Image (cartoon, rainbow, N blue to C red; front, side, top):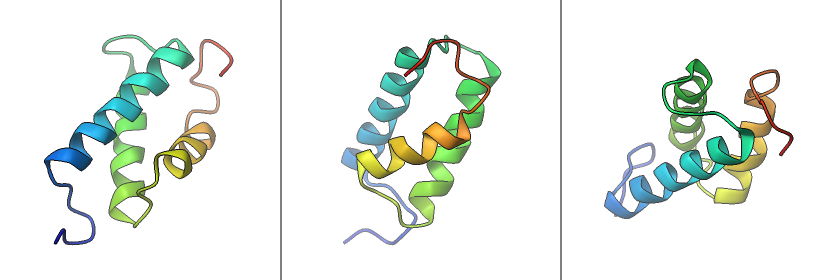
Length: 72
């Protein structure tokens, strides 16, 4: 059982993949400040109980407004 707001190994890998894919699609590279901003937002969403990848991506869309270099 996973305590709400904590990620097990599989969940952490999934969250990392979501962030990587999202940043790639948005044209956010490497150490761009937007990546860190989105990573913090992703962790906040997960800690708040949002754990479905599609729900996280939708929430990241609003968090990334103005940071995107390519249209998603």
